[in-house]
Image (tube, rainbow, N blue to C red; front, side):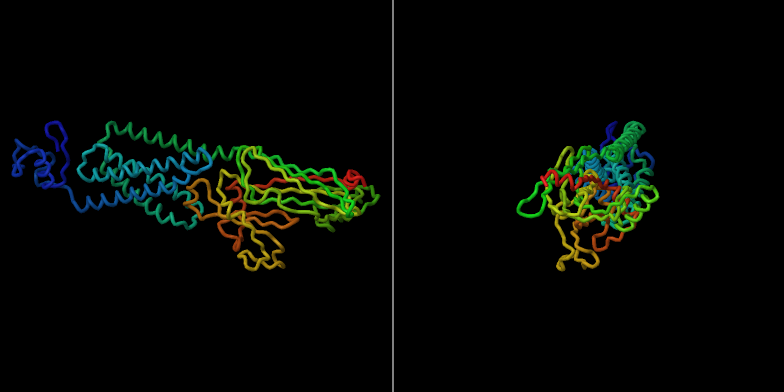
Length: 465
C-alpha cells in the first residue's frame, strides 16, 4: 500500500486494509471502489491471493527451521569458539556462532516477510539464513556420510537439510530478494565472501596443522657406576631426557624404558659363511632380531634388569617443554653380562587434533584386579596396566558427526608399549589394521624411541672394580 509515493504497509485481506486506512485517519466506511480514493493494480477489491492458513503454516515452519538451525550452529560452534587450542579452530567456532546469530535475525525477518512486509530486505535476510542452513547442514551431512556412525545430532541436521531444500525452493520461487537494491551485486558479494572464508578455513584448519613439524629430542645415557661395599652389587645411574622441539604440543599416550643385560658365548670363527650361520642360529635361539650381525658372538640372550614409565601416560609436552628422569639400577658384580643397554619408547598424539580426558586416562587399571572392569586372567593377559580415556576431536564438526573415540594404552614391564584409538572401549577393542591406522593418523599418533649401550667392563672399571 502506498499513499502518494510513500509505502505505508502491506495488507493480506480486506480487514487488514481497513485497519491500515483507519490508522491513517480514513473513515471506517470509506468506499473502497471509489477510484478517486483507491487505485487497484492487478485486480480489484475482491482479489486477495492470500490463504491465511497456508501463509501462517509457512511462517511457522520457516521460523521453527531457522531457530533450530541457529541452535545447532551454536552447539557446534561454541565449544571451538570458547576452548579450541588453535586460532584457526577458534575462528571456525566463531563463524558458526555468528552464522547462528544471522539465522536468528532471519527468523525475526520471517515474521515481517510473511506478515506486513514493512522492511524491503526481510525476504533477502530470510534467504541468507536459509542458505547458511543449507551450507552447514550439507557440510555436516557430508562428514557424517564418511563414517555413517550413529550420533544424536544426525536426528537434527538430517531433517534440517531436507527443510533447507524446501525453504530455498519456496524463497527462490517467490523471488524474495526483490526488495534488495542491486540484488545481483549483493548475491555476488555473499558468494565471494563465502568462498574466500571457506578456502581460508580449509587452509588454516587442514593444511597448516598437517604441515606443522613434529620434532623431539630423546636421549638416554649411562653415568659412572659405583660399587656398594655392603652388598655385591654395582649401582649404575641412568639419565633419560625428552624435549618437544617441534611446533605442536603433544599428549604422552604411553611410554617405557627397559634396561637389559646381554649375555653371549664367543667363538673364534672368522669365515663369512660361518659368521652368517652363527647369526642365523643366534636369532633363531633368542628370538631377537636386531638386523645386526656380530662376528665371534653366539647364543645371544637378553635379561630385563629394570623397566618402568618414563614421563607417564596422560601428561603432555608443550612446545619447547623438556623433562628429564634420573634412575639408578643395580647389577651383580659377578653378573655374566657383556653389555648393558637401555631402550626408551614414547607414544604420543598431537594436541591440536584432539582433547584427551587426562583425569580419566591417568587412572591406572590393573588386569589382575578381579573387582576392576578391565580384569583379565593372567594366563591370557599376563600382568598389565591399562589406561583408557575419552578423546574429543578439537574440531567440533567431527564430534557431532561421529561416535566418541577412546584412547587405550596397555603397559607391561619389559614389553612394547601398545596404544590404540577406537570408537569402542577396551572390552571390545577388535579393530582391523586399516581402521587402527586410520584412527592413529587422524589424531597424529606416532612413536619415538632412543637407546644406548655400554659394556659391563667399562661400568666395572668406572666403579673401581
